[in-house]
Image (cartoon, rainbow, N blue to C red):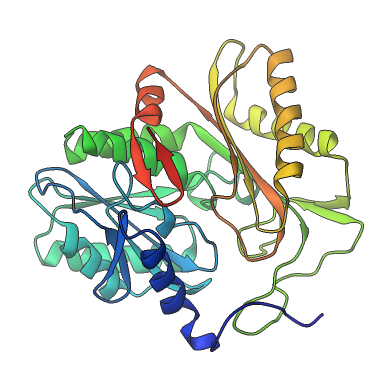
Length: 333
């Protein structure tokens, strides 16, 4: 099937999309330096800054969450590719202040390689930087080897709670500890029902039959835990939620945050029908649905499918989740 996308020259996709983001939200973000997205109004240098990095093609993630209460800067790579370490270091130096910088990285090989090189460079320059990896995809590694698990939409609550803690003036160590507690208490599982095309080449990123779905599909078409015949919304929600609850070892009476994220082509209608069943199952299990978000937070072009994330909350994490923020694609008043 021929690709249909509103683009100009393929080599200009990333700079043009970043320029468009900054022009669309001039009160929240600005384009600066080597195509870095930063807060329009910089945070006070006596507060911890948050920086992230990752490939483009997944909008609004990750640059869509730069702004008050969340990220201070985002370093976007080329389509589905990690940015180079020099640009990440540039972003860190841009926002670095007396309180230091927390670098939040999704666990994908290219991103981690770039981040590790950046950390070495930052150390040599005497910068106060600490890093956290998000790796909550239960399909990509065993529970006792979290380092094997990929980072998916779980980046969002990590940005949110760590960003809120930073706005409150907490130290770098405290922000890291909060981010780690959020990260350790969240789990994500994805399902795909159709592929996406690479916007630069027009090539499909994986193959899937018209009557098939794959549980555990990765952000870039990485193989999941199993291919099966397409299920109904309720059946799919039940399969995914049961796997997530078992891995998190969620118990009666606990409070959960649930995120249902659309992969790009799945409609809001479908997301809400799936979320309805999630809510019903949690109620039947006497597990409290404390907070929820349904929508598109990280996508893969026109891939159809969802990422379902659950996270165990405590009083402090709930308060940080509820704290004000103002970014292009996530606002809390």
